[in-house]
Image 1 (tube, helix red, strand yellow):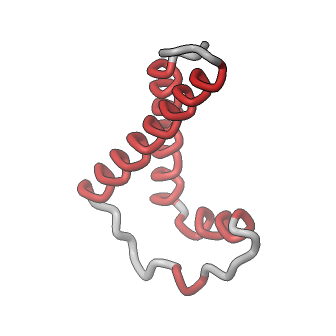
Image 2: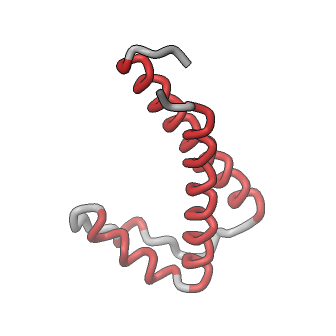
Length: 91
């Protein structure tokens, strides 16, 4: 049986690390990060979505952090919950 809270917390920590790594890459080289997205989106032309300028400010960083880490925590908690339900346990 999975400890759903521990699973969600661990995933949130990983998401936090990835968020700051992505933020650092975007700050240093936005073109590199943008060009990496094209293959991961199955070759869709993302050029019309390219930002015209940097829009990094504290509000956007905090909002993105809350959404990314909170969403990850919620998804992994739900995964653990449903896994335990399907396994026959209750936690």
